[in-house]
Length: 438
Image (cartoon, rainbow, N blue to C red; front, side, top):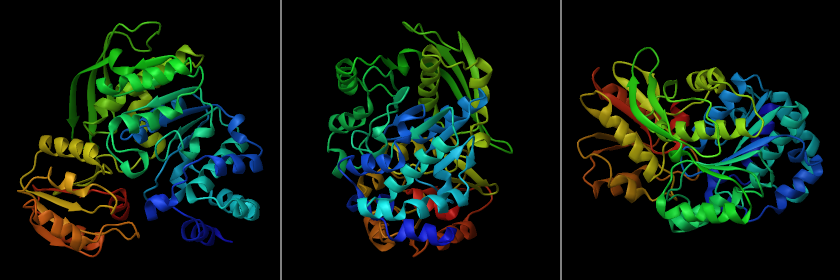
């Protein structure tokens, strides 16, 4: 198979959660254990850092990878989903896995893995582990796909576990309460492996502390160690987030940064004020278990995260006059952060190009949206996408006025035709809407 045929095999013939939803979800790790046995258990040959959470895990994964890369380590990064290119999911020092590596892997293991009946995600995770092992990475940052306890990635025993936050998402698979979802995410906590908790939700803290105690795992809540004193987005040729941070008196840990300090992030969304303290806490814990990351490595890694990792779709500016922004926030918490940032962004009229997948709690999102915006409802070209006319009808119940379009491209083009130079066009609602625009 050539590269395009290989991708067709992976996309069309394998269950893929992000395309078809719950039907692709495997509620056990049996397949992943079987595929790793076939590969010679590469997960046991590389150092890893494991990241889970409802929101923020992608940004934190990229921040940590960028900082490790700045420290001179050969750093693997495994994330999902991709936006433009399948190979975005698997990187070493920011460079995507070569097409030939993808082709050779599928050709080599096609027969063996067909017998196991792997999902798309399992295939891809196996490819990542095999590649990181072959290329002798110093460390690999591994982002969970869904949940934690039963996620395919949960066969690793990392140097550090990180849980960014807990929100209501994938409730049909992870549970219908925050506590149940937290329990699933806490499933990545391993025996004597330190764990960092990002957004400290008081009602959920016991879930993590109890799991950590059972596993004798040191636990660190980032909000007890770092505080954001001030945050500001500067819009120029490339938007940048400026943060004034304060180190708090932490116990049993030495901070890389001391006292008050300024950080600059090329990820400019205000919601990074939640992700950066989590990242700082993770770096401090890594240093306290044997890594050697300097203050300069940390600051440069945060500043250069987009350049180092090529992360896309996080409050990303596409053009000026009118200002066009896209963001992959796709659940209630994510959209709340997007709306907050829009409120801080100077503009006249607001144009929202929106599409969703059909298993989201769309009503809870629609009731949050401003009635004075102009809406362009659309459908991404995946089976799981919500029909644009159904979305249009739902939106009318919440007095949201606009037009429906059968494709993302038509919706975006209409927004550009209607917007004046001092307006703001925002594109989002679904990762797949953003992917098609990019």
